[in-house]
Length: 168
Image 1 (cartoon, rainbow, N blue to C red):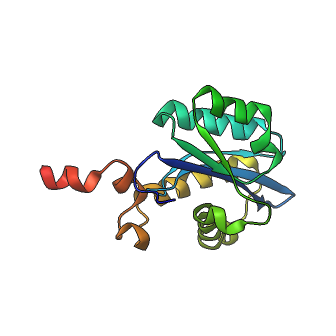
Image 2: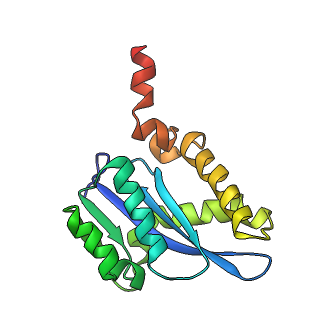
C-alpha cells in the first residue's frame, strides 16, 4: 500500500526501557507519512490502559486516521483498544506474527531513541524518564531532520511548515 498523505495510517508499538531498578514500558502513536510522534505514554506494567490513553489523546488532538497498524500484542487486540478504533471508524491493520518489518518506522524510532538518548542516560524514577522522554520526543518531532523526509522534520511535514514559510 502506498502511504502518501497525513493521517492515512497511524501505527503504535511498545518498547521497554531499562531503569536503575527495573524497567518501564513506552508506547508511541506515530503518523506513518510524516513520522510524527502524535502521543506517547510510559507505564510500569504492560496493562492496556496506557496504550488506550495514548490512542485517545492522539485522536483528540489530531482527529482519526483512516487506518491504524499495530502488532498483535494483547494491548492492541484488547476490547478497550479495538473498541476505541471502531468507535472512531478507524480500519484496523495488524501485522502478521514475526513480521517486524511491517512496523519498520516504529522500530526505527526505538533504535534512534535508545542509541541517541536512553543508553546515554540513567533514570532513577518514572518522572525522570517521562521528563527526559518529553524533551527528546519534542526534539525528534521539531528539530531532528529525516533523510527520508527530504531533510525535513516530522513537524515540518505534518504541519506543512515549509510551504507556510515560503508563502510568508
